[in-house]
Every structure is written in C-alpha cells, then in structure tokens.
Length: 145
View (cartoon, rainbow, N blue to C red):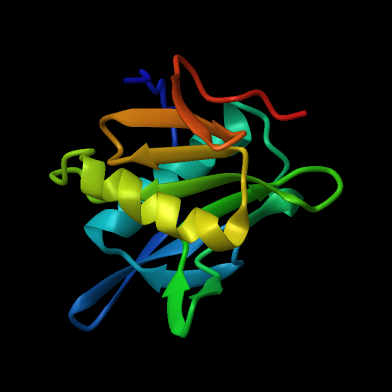
C-alpha cells in the first residue's frame, strides 16, 4: 500500500435542492458529489499539487469501448506525447482495494495499454507496473516524465 499525503484542499461545493455538487477543475464543471467523486477530486488534487502532474494531460471520466460495451474510466494521465501513461480507478472509501478492483482496471487497460495502473479508495492506494505482460506492485506512484 502507498501512503498518500493529501495537500490541504478547499473544494468548491454548492448545494441544489436535494444534491450537493463539487467543482471539477479538470473537467471545468460542477459534478454531483458522491462518495466516489469525493475520492476522485481529492486524488486529482494530490496528482496536481503533490506529484506535479500537468492538468492539461489529465482526463476524467471519458468513455472507452471494451468490445461492444461502453465503459468510463475514472482518471487517465497522458505523457507528453499524449499516449496514455497511467490509469487510475477510484472507489469510495468503504470499498476495499481487492482483486476485483484491480481486475476492473486491468480490463480497461486492454483498450488503454498504459504502463501504470493505480487503484485507490482515498484511504489506501496501490500502484502497478504493467509492462511486458507482467504486473508488479510499486512502492510509490510513478514520477511524471
């Protein structure tokens, strides 16, 4: 497991009848504040402010095709040649980081072909190198190059 030191973060939150919304600075829009969205937004802040990943190379909740099925990944970081570099699967805090969570990210990687996969529930985080047909767990998130 990787220890994540989240930076101080004051999210923009607004209320509407029966719902709360949080502003997503990557998508530049207000999104419904769900437990998973809370994890996603905090992890994005970590990537931007602690790991110094460029916002311009991060995509959030984009559609991909897995065979004939449409799916949405949580976060993808691209390298400077705009090739997918890292796929991040976010779960709400009470969802354990299980083999099933990793399997979901690995299925997405059939289409994405990233060298790095990260799974997080906001409390815990795991990172994996997925190159050469092998998967190995990493002690820390990869540096952005």
